[in-house]
Image (cartoon, rainbow over all chains, first blue to last red; front, side, top):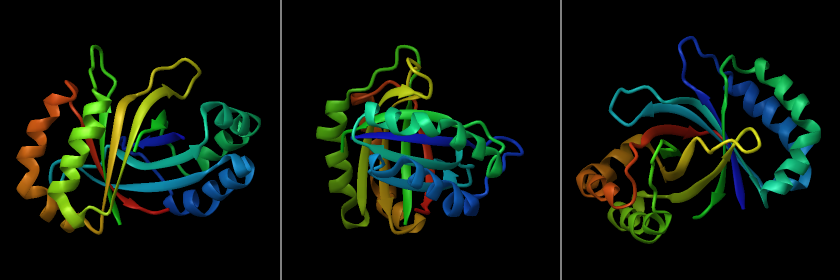
Length: 103
Length: 103
């Protein structure tokens, strides 16, 4: 299983509309990627490691797929549509990580 | 539910022993934190957003708790023990994010 994590940095004047993300963007992801998408999770940053420290990321979205190939095949045809939706919920530049799920 | 994510940056000469992490460190976390720990996940970085791009993080560990208070109460007494174990599997400086699980 692989996990595609999309991390939205907590930058100065960074904006992230969690409601739009959960109610519009992620359902759109689910609809467009179909059965290739094996699971999803959304985290909202609330803090960092030290008490009172800011969260490094405003939000993180995680998408599960059987393999990198399955992700690419499902995501490729809809990449432009999904990337065009990003300004509707954030002005930050997301960091993308592809991981192999170990535990 | 809150998620404590520990992100190990993919720095130059960064070392991360995934086997030690999964077989020794995370079981130690589980044993010390006990029932306060509601779930865990481990991801190994394999790539970034662009084809061939490196993963931003060598690894990510995620721990679930009922609340920030439950995390602090469980982690506090064992913080030093767990932090002392970090050099056994990595030479990187982890980034810590506390999130509220939204989806």
